[in-house]
Length: 192
Image (cartoon, rainbow, N blue to C red; front, side):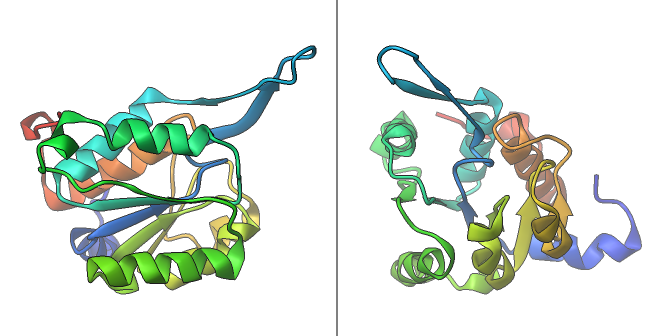
């Protein structure tokens, strides 16, 4: 909850956010992988309330992009799902961006290009990450967010640490914070 006078600058930054950059493992996904002992098939877990949070941001007109070091198809599958929603197909929402196999400075370079294509600056971005591969993009963003389980080095540079862990509601915590800063009742937003 944002309610103290010292949080007024942070609240103003949240009002100006036009894009949010999310890491995948430890942010969208819990970071745990389940591997079948015989087939080697791998599964990852995430929370559906985070997906609803992303829809809330998109309903506000905020652009979303994922950038991760992983190279599996899990994030692609999620992005494809997010990009096939009726609100995207009818033109109300922009497609989410998706970058795989990037770490550190390479994350920043990919986002630089993505932002340039959207005519958005880093000062209009928030980023959420949980580990060293996210450090540079968090430092460059106007608002840096860390999920509850993030590494200490990331929490130390974060403007806000969510109550919930990555893959278990951290994204939704941050989305709710933006809604609160903007005075938006989530029940008034069209989500499909």
